[in-house]
Length: 547
Image (cartoon, rainbow, N blue to C red; front, top):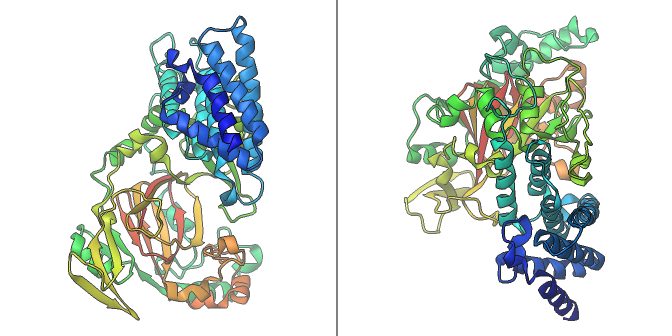
């Protein structure tokens, strides 16, 4: 209607000369480009959700940016400052909209506004090429836009991120060495070996691996001498059985028919030992060099259901130094101006020095993050297992393998999926997500279920995993929060036997299986199986979720 015609007319007037200066971030919205179509659509969608004033401000900012970049203004610095100020307001507005109410129900227009405002803000920043400060801050802002923003302008965003990343990594100090946030020790230990066998045994939840001995570390004083504790641990240990395992990788057909169709977990020993990541990722310097400047979301506290839980955005290298592989000489007084609090990273000017240091000695966990979409060079270090191309369908449909197996009340057929990559349709077969899980020893994923097939693959370090079949859901005491119905209220690493027996009596009689995953191992988890995961050493895992 009229709003669209007005928006297009103004856009024509403002963007006509962008083709003459194509080297900058916002050149992608020049007339005739795919970005131009996305921008027109964004204007319409913003007007439809009451964002007419945001449209006008964005139009003025892009007009000023275009004018300054093409040299058509007298005071370029003043013009760039106006663009930064306007885009800062738009970032604040989009941030407020994204964090009001249910995150999943936020209109996509506000997420897309967030992306284009961040792109324009970075484009208007004046970089000092003799320092890494501004490029690193720009990279932080663009990474956050990638993490929180919508689907529009993704191509331009990835180009901008690549350009900023190259600026940071190519800047060198006087000795020709890459600039880093702090000195590095001459010799660094490899990751994943930071716990003795005794420490690992002591860290396991009560009853793990069938061990009925009472562990006193972490148990309240009133419980240590009571027979009730020993009885509870013995009762839990008696319900344990090992997860079956393959020392040699099974064929696709055997894996599919014997495990996927039957819906049983199984350990695949050594699956990842031939990945490049298996030898590369245990060296902290490789991870710092490859991804150290990139901003990632970090979970702080015991776990996401605990009262201590918080979230922050940190440069990957800082997260590594602070929580996973701290240099031996680090002191409690050291701080880095690159640690960026969630809100300040999103709303502050690129040239500001707003930084917040997370509380020292908290557990930090890079959990369930699409790190390999964000940093493709790390994606090249792993290999998607062929098992993730297998899927199950209801019998009666076309089944190329001609195999079927009856389980309970339904008959399932097995086939190889032709959907190799992620798909927006959650009901279609194929790979849904590949996520990274990196943290120090002691990180925990509380007992929960996932709706997909899951191949949890251990790259370095050791993890303890305990699983319960779906038929024991009543014994898991699912959360009463509708948003967390797939999370159990029972902590297997309990510290009060009397409370466990009183509040969760069915849990004590629920059969479970468990395993300690070694470097290179993978655990197949069928959909809807309850599982508890605990890092016994510093650990890097990759999960493949597929339908």
